[in-house]
Length: 289
Image (tube, rainbow, N blue to C red; front, side, top):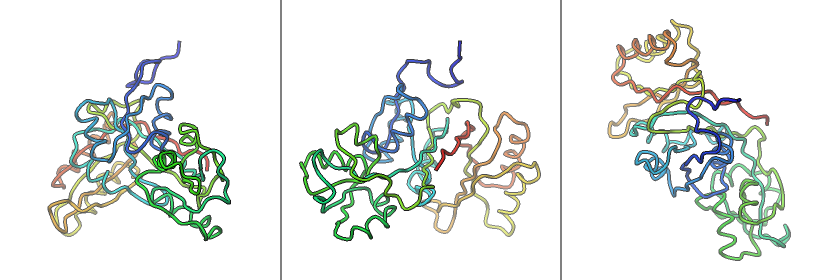
């Protein structure tokens, strides 16, 4: 008999996952990649509500996008990670495929307006250059744009959204793969109050702030280099409420189950003002482009 992954819910049991945005979004695709049909999706209007859902125990998990390979990091999520007590239990990477979707019987030549999130609209620049007559209309969400089409009964409009949204809302795809770059991926953190990893952890995320002295960042990075720990990402964000001070987000290979990683963090605490471990978790693999 196949055993469930450590930290995962038993097979067949529903797992509540909060996402930002509507059903049918890329966030729902990420949740399904982790839990399949067991994922019971709880839509939230914004990132603050997303974090609160898991913090208050209304959902078991919150699934938050942290970065896109084209648009970069989602800054509001990084700021919330610093303020929240939630821990990273896993991650998911989803390929972003933008499709032009409309109500049944609407044809491409009927379309005059295209609804979607501003980031999605910006990632389909070549399509809009080929169809200069189309007016872009920014909305709060990709999948929610299709729901908006249905509410309006729009016969002269379409939306840019995932294929899943077309299926959920009974719409049809007019044109596939509008994205300018095929290698377009979004990475998500799966967050929970306990932070129990979904499987064997092999990646760790931390936050730290360093003192304003010469060579401070050099010494911080040195604690990893001395132990041959490979850094996967380093990024700085302004420390809210403290002008011109910054917090660093670092991802590295390895987990706190390894002595070298524990020693590195103890060393880091000696040279930093603040060190916070977001969690050790199984590293997600990037799908094929």
